[in-house]
Image: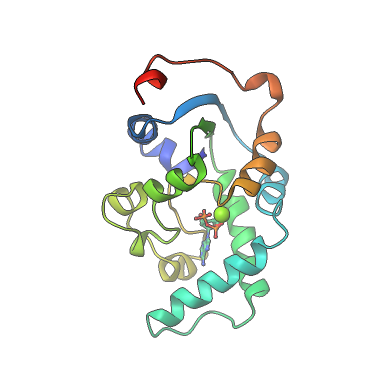
Length: 181
Ligand code: ADP
Ligand code: MG
């Protein structure tokens, strides 16, 4: 999980961490940094499918609302998103975290909510705290502001964790609640 610069600027660090903690996940790594543009580009392209999938997701979102997408070519759409993401994600400090637990990736995604805050379910972090949409982001020529990055799959998490953390920065420890949970 990465708390993006808007989460830090909006003083939502504690609120967001509390939600993952409350669910019962265990924090095993945490650091604050200002990422470089290279670090962000590498992060988003660790998964070779990400460009295509993200472009397709955007096109589908536009069409489901009867809107015309900015392009029919997913890769063209993602090229612009990636450029804007580099600006967004390097604009200030972020907080990178590793949360451990059964089904951690799936459960983090569930309580974080969908990528586009406009459609993110009520009760999710993105649904509760953000007003933004693809169309607003495109109009302003920026990335959609949605507070959080969460790995999209276990495979993605396995690539992202070593991208952000060294092995000795991840702590193996027990908490007493593990016995009752
Ligand atoms: P998620 O963060 O939910 O895994 P993606 O991996 O598809 O979503 O996209 C990465 C990030 O790129 C999003 O969190 C968002 O900040 C930005 N983004 C994705 N699609 C768009 C879009 N169509 N317009 C603007 N920004 C976007
Ligand atoms: Mg993603």
